[in-house]
Image 1 (cartoon, rainbow, N blue to C red):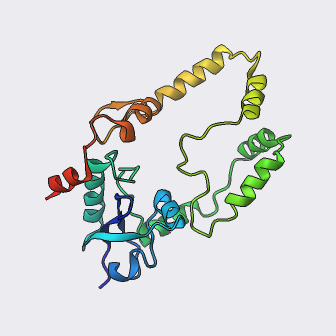
Image 2: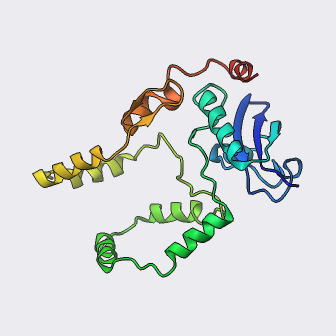
Image 3: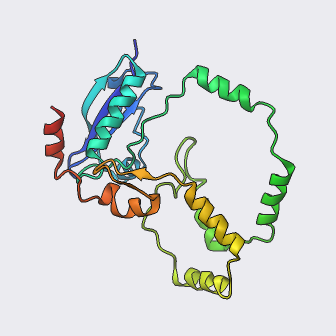
Length: 233
């Protein structure tokens, strides 16, 4: 019987780890991990593309996929933000069974988008032009990925605009004034944003601020990979 599994892989030369789970596998872990399946992490895939070779550090098989998801989430909450770990997300995996997928499909069958929404989208895109550089970048990245792979910009952080782009943005924003109605909408939108909790220190707050000062940047993160592994025993 093929079982879902939790895994940890390691890049020996870089002393980097990544933990995850796999429950839609059609092969046992010994024939699947790093053979057919190379994790869902863009960071891991990028390192592999740079000829870094990961190895299997640990594998735990589970009979119950929900227990597997609970275990993975609890484990990653302990190590996320710690030096040596590539994990960036500690949210519990949403298990989509064939039955659930079928129900979603049935619920969406025949659903039509409101014509008013379609018109708003059309109007918002009317007159938009793309620079040749942008078009080339899209060709080089978006269409270069195989089916199932993430877009080139998913998970990218720390990107900066060129001076010419900054200048265009500046010129576009000059003289713009926000109406009271617009300010109210911004305020209401903020109120509807749920606070997030840092998995390292447990503090909660607005997503933007929390991402800047917590998660990967949290001062309460574990000191070393070795310390995390000792606490897991």
